[in-house]
Image (cartoon, rainbow, N blue to C red; front, side, top):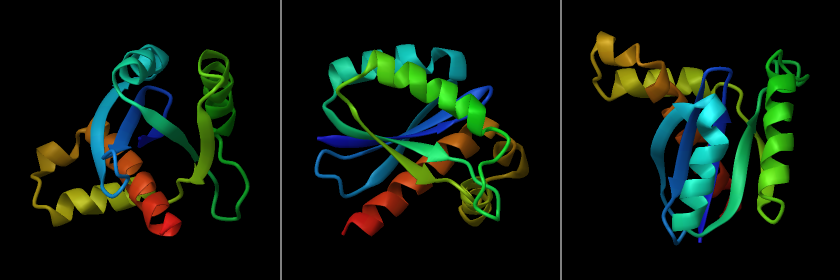
Length: 136
């Protein structure tokens, strides 16, 4: 069964998923945030997912960031739609900066690095890979 990670944002939501053996995290897609629940319904109907990780935005001092209330609203909807799905919050500090650096390191051109959807998808992948590394 897979583990899925969600980097939820005001406009876009980055989604990453593991392989069935939960060894490798891969970017899946970026969806409009208002369509995220519908996307998840479709995905869960096709794939077996054991657990969902949702990024928890924090400030440097560990307190919730300004986007935390927005994500709490999403989590409430998620739990009501998928009551049997395991849900775990994970720290998402620095994932956007790490995603951008990953894009630079992989040789993406400046125009490609401006794709905020790709940054969100890579951020979700970084959260998921970090989770897998800690799980071992």
